[in-house]
Length: 310
Image 1 (cartoon, one colour):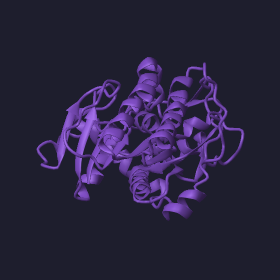
Image 2: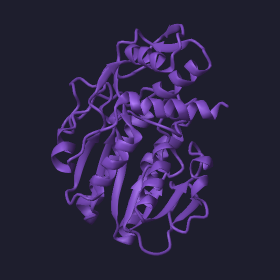
Image 3: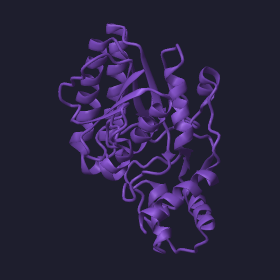
């Protein structure tokens, strides 16, 4: 296949580039490097099946030649990033998705969009299934990301219904692994780097809020299975192993053999109190569920960050 991956220099996008190239496909990686990093894909430069295009997908997108799939992953995705770049986040969710869908229509290619558990907002049901419509504050600080992704889903389905584009929507829950940015504000890299530096671990609220962490290799397998199913579907991809943030901090310190002070700070506005996917549909439709244990995934991620600060 010949595949365009927007946001291909980001955390998940760069791993997707690796995954598709390892399977023998041709990859065009498109990223304007607002939050993506060239070092994530530097090892692919020179590979005859890989092409990097430095480009902002909120503008008209031109790609020469045929495309089998467009995987639209372009977007700031961490709290620090989308709070720093609120307008860009909204633009890539709206204009970027529109331009990527226009390219899919022109190339008669299949289209997958990376959506997010954040479209459920601060959920009122637990766990969250694909039928749940969400509880989102559109004018809160997190609304720029939540609503950008909700609009992206809506326009993707509009192109499917009106232009008959073959689509998939992956609602991605908390995913972690190497190549996350140390300062992106998410729990895993923040806690790991604080522990590596023997700094206090900052827990927001009382730490009772829950998250479910999925290792990157499991997510990649889920995405690949999703594009290889014949069903147009919206599917949750994530781990059902839910734990509190405070328990996660304690697990991490045990794995790293450190004993850091835990400092409690005020919970950010609209921060979700619970987060766990219902992955029944992924199990039934894709035959997919995560395989990598939290501890095994964390050991690999800790090693990555340990090497980064040497």
